[in-house]
Image 1 (cartoon, rainbow, N blue to C red):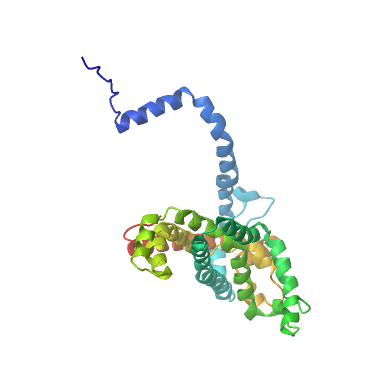
Image 2: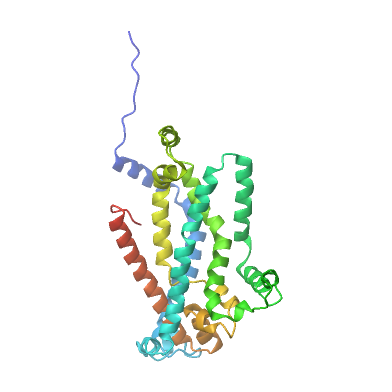
Length: 313
C-alpha cells in the first residue's frame, strides 16, 4: 500500500492578502514602532511645509503670519512673468539643465559598458574606486577646487602659458559647471548600469562572439538591451528635473562678472527671498519652478512611453 502524500491546498490571492492583514492586525504594535518615526519625519518635513505655498499668494509679513497676511492672488506671478529678467533667468536654467543632460547622461552608460569589458576583477575594482571617489567630495569643496585650478595663477593657466581668469567669463561658466558635474557624478551614476549589466545573458554574448560579432555589435545587441529599462527610467527622472538645478553649486561658482550666465532661478529665489526679504515673490518663483518640473515630467514620461512600446514610469 502506497503512502499518500498530503499536499496543502494552494491559497488564492485574496486568501493570502487576508492572511497577511490578519497578521498585521495581530501585531500592529510592532509595525507601529517601525513605521511611526518614518511617518512623523515625512509629515513634519515633507507635508507640513507645503502650507508655506500660501505665501506665494499673500503679501506675507512675519508679524501677521501665513494665515493673517493679506491676500494678493496671482500678483507675484504676473510680476515675475512680466519682469525683463524673466527670460534671461529661465533660459540660463534651461541651458544648464539641457546641456548637462545631453552631455552628462550618456557618460555613466559609457563608463559602465567600458567597465563591463574589463575581465580582470582586480583591475576593474581599482578603476571603480577611482571613478566613484569624486562623488564623496562635497559640492563646496569641489567648487573650491575648480576656482583654484582655474584661477589666473592656477595649474591650468600655467600649463597653457596664459593668465586668463576663467571664473569671470560668462561664456565659460556653463562648460565649467557641466564638466565638473560630470567628473563628480558620472562614476557613481554608473553603478546602476554596471549592476544591470551583470544580468546580461552570457549565452547571448558567447553566441554573438561565435557568430563573429565585434565589440560594438556585442554592446548594441546584447548589453544595451539588458540595461534599456534602467536607461529609460533614469532619463525620465533626469528630464523631469530639468528645472531643479542645485542651488549650492551655481551659487558657489557665481561671480559678479559671470552673472549673465550663472544667475538661474534658484539663485534668484535666494537673492530675492533671503537677502531682500521679499518672501512672497520668491515663493511664487519657486512654485513656478516646481510646477514646470511636474509638467515636464509628465510630458517626458508620455513621450518616452509612446516611443518605448508603452513602457514608462
